[in-house]
Image 1 (cartoon, helix red, strand yellow):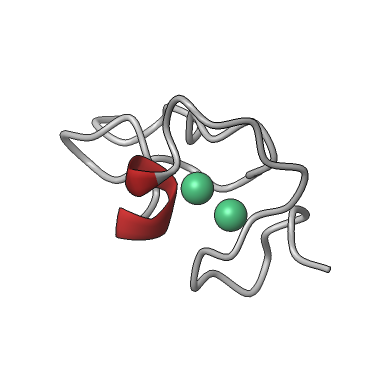
Image 2 (cartoon, protein in one colour):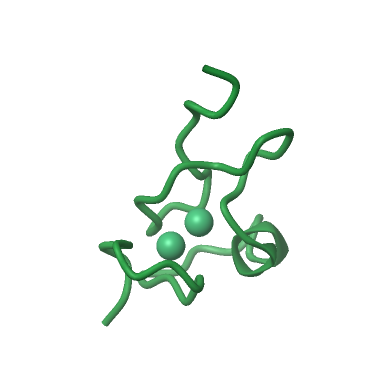
Length: 49
Ligand SMILES: [Zn+2]
Ligand SMILES: [Zn+2]
């Protein structure tokens, strides 16, 4: 149960990586910005357009 947090990117629906608040480098780099879509490399993400 070490990896049960959701990614903190506002538009991202993925689970965060272990030891991080974000699922990917993309999301981590996006912190502090308000983005309506997500470009992380995960296929299941609902933030993709
Ligand atoms: Zn995402
Ligand atoms: Zn994410």
